Length: 350
Image 1 (cartoon, one colour):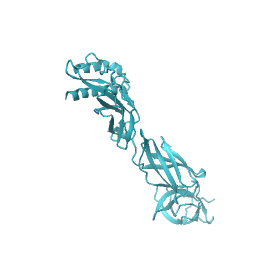
Image 2 (tube, rainbow, N blue to C red):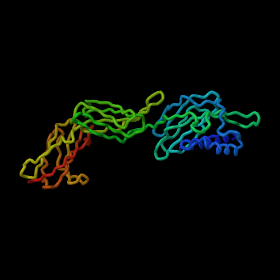
Image 3 (tube, helix red, strand yellow):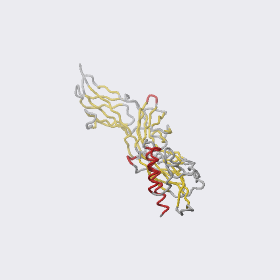
Image 4 (cartoon, rainbow, N blue to C red):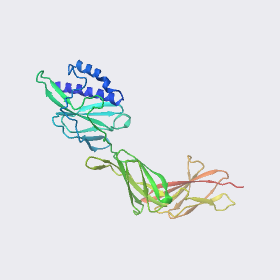
């Protein structure tokens, strides 16, 4: 019980000074306060800081050896003469410490911390436990003072690894140059991409290193592509990868690729829409509305091989209509919505 009490007091002292340091306060100015705390406990009354003889060195070779969405594991080399270690961390201005005994590896939770964030730094403190031959009390020497920047061995390489990326987007498509950007939200050191056309051809790969986006170049435009992503983290001796996301789909087509005009210029009926020949499309469903946020009414279905469709409906003069083209592709035995484009139509007569 004596050992646990003394160690707990030391941990609290370290935590107190580290918190002051991380809060941007002059820690050395707090020496008198620490002296009073030590004196009140009857320990090291002549010390103005935590006992540190210099015999015990700080831990070295700290590294991240494992992580996932919930936890991270850090290891370090054993310190000669040390009988135990304290794992100390700071998160969102709050400090905490955990005695880990003589272990040189520590696994800790990273998911359920304040504001949904996670640890990004920690300190490892070594200590030596001994019995004072004069008093018979258990005493400790620490590898740090807990004052100023002397908080132990500092490590900032803590990471989380998203199990499976769910937030994925196609950004800034540039079909004319057959390029597009994939964006993903995740925790990790980067994310991998693999994709292909719906026929399994025109494959592509990419890797977003320390980034949330990655530009990809493909071989053909006016083509439906599918892709998926997975995150990764660089550990001390290997790269750990998350699971592949669900397949994502998009059609590499210009925004202005869909053009239209009235079949009969003297009538405001039968409006014809045309587009380039598309690859990987099984059908196109067309729907119409007078508002981009309102409900759309289906006006017809075109085959995937089609390059035009006539909407046999009346378009009222001086009214803006929005026609949505929803593209589908065969995925297994089902037809899956893969993308959509919208065009506006307004008929005005002189």
